[in-house]
Image 1 (cartoon, one colour):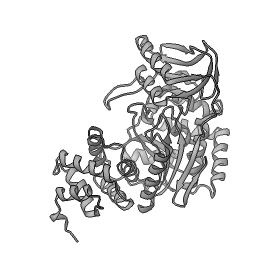
Image 2 (cartoon, one colour):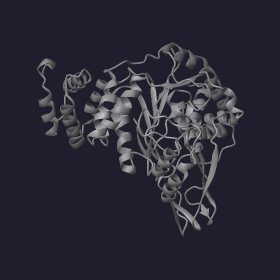
Image 3 (tube, one colour):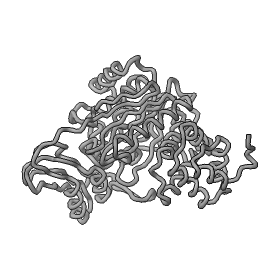
Image 4 (cartoon, one colour):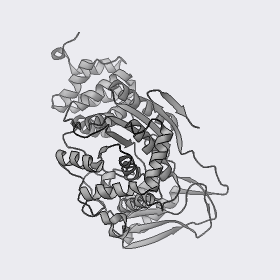
Length: 449
């Protein structure tokens, strides 16, 4: 067997360039050397491009994931009672599921110790949404984090800076070398963070459609398979659910607006739409993964009861209170940030909503000030938009398509122009998109359409 001290980066690059599998020792050598600054960017970029072109098998991808995990700190959650279950979405627009799912799952007795990220580009971030709640703290010490989960059943905080430094370095390099869209690199990036964060089980919401990173159903299933294989190899019970993102999941797009919608659903007042349906499905799988039930249908019934009884709303209020926020927002949403102006966008013609460019809608929210294009960019928690129509809905000329919430009226024209390009009105009603396309688990796959 080749000893680590005899390994050379150039040999690893040429081996992958030629389509050969890299050994665990070679992958460990590369990740360790790059994080320590011993391997320069130009060589790392060459290996990333070789991986992009030649791929990796499931063993290589699992070894890459663990090498990235071992590049930094790991969170020990053994002090939290029960099976800790995490949930991750591959990114979307109007995707407020965490604020609904986590309280429902906790209300059913399964602890949720979640580390989340911020929004970047057209997708929103859970931390940004929570920080729109007055006083809410997303930075807790490890001891306070564990204490919060043991007391409430859930806590949501920002990712530790010492967690998976290899991922931050590699992602920055992938972003400028056109190697982002590589299944093994995407899968190892997501799974390394989840494994390092200490969860015992994981439910993945893999989005597909015009607002997702994986636009085709085939790519979404491929990514789901890759991540479930990693979970299986590394003894993390992992389930992936492939869901639709051909329109925003909720009606609200924007941080405080999405918090309002989540509260409305937990209060039993929200629409019977995709956001509620997907949230209940994810909650059911999380309850099952956390051994809170013996079948998915039982988990669905438990999640529905937690919602209808108000126990989920109570858990959200508890979490907000423990993390320093003003829990009165669950009863009085006017305490959340409010935009100065609410301006309608109306239809130019009669017809039916034929298609929605969901990524473009997310960009509209960013133009209004709700999103960022750089990690250090400040956002306005009050602004965004609320849709008045969904795919297939009939619309009359002059009827409202959306309400823009904004503080800077000068942003309206640009945002409106882009929004109207995102919404296509046709003469005939099209059939609704399926909400869920299937699941991938260690037991196998199910395709629903």
